[in-house]
Amino acid sequence: MTGIDIVPLSDAIGAEIRGLDLTQPLSPGAVKIVEQAWYDHVIVLVRDQDLTLDQHKSFASNFGQIAVRGGNTATKTERQVSESVMLVSNIRENGKPIGTLPDGEMMFHSDTPYTEHPLKATLLYAIEIPSKGGETLFSNSYKVAETLPKIVKQRLTDKKAMHVYDYGSTAVPSGSYDRSRNPHHAHPVFRKHPMTGRSSLFVSELMTVEIEGVSAEESQELLDILFEHQRKPEFVYAHSWRPGDLMMWDNRCSVHARNDFPSDERRMLRRLTLVDEHPVLAGAPPFLEAVS
Image (cartoon, rainbow, N blue to C red; front, side, top):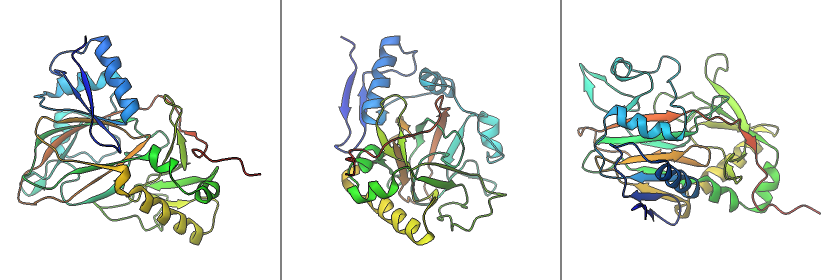
């Protein structure tokens, strides 16, 4: 008996893993259980942890190489903590946020799809949480892809979508971004997971600006259909954070969003991410029958 229990968080996505103490190194057997639960449920939650940064990193490193933040987007405080850390926080010192993504609502997105090699996983640890709001919403991109109308799957077969990092905080990219200045990259609309072999929808309302190879009108029509489908409640789990929560999600087969929260209450979460060892592979639209 391992003493580890896997408890689904919802019918849509996610599982809580009980019986783990992440202040201690995990056994190889425990690592396999967590990893398989992650593949099965896309996001996994471990509650009631009191983790130092080193313990956070120790757990993360069981599942891949911890990524170093690129560019110059880190705040002074984040750089002082670690080159790998993002502080998702609205806390301000001398009028300036100590972290990143401080305030407000955010629409669905995955992390860094605008790069050639998007991040594999994100591990977010809750330190300070407001009394209400600030939930993270997760949408299951496997189920979203599988349940798209057949005609939409056919129209998107072999298509790529362009993703861009071109927003101040929560605004949707306009599509008229300067490609010489803004990070951007095109990836298959349907992405094949390297470990599960399943295909998922790899677009998001916050990051995806166009479907390549079609007219601007058709591109916008298709994106509107995909974004609306992605938001449907049957695919989404809304996580209400508690201090001590650690959530690990798979950016290859999920998107996440954030609800607003009181601006006068402190919010602090510590984020680490993992490098993806595999290239992005196109995946056949799920359950698309051959067209005769």
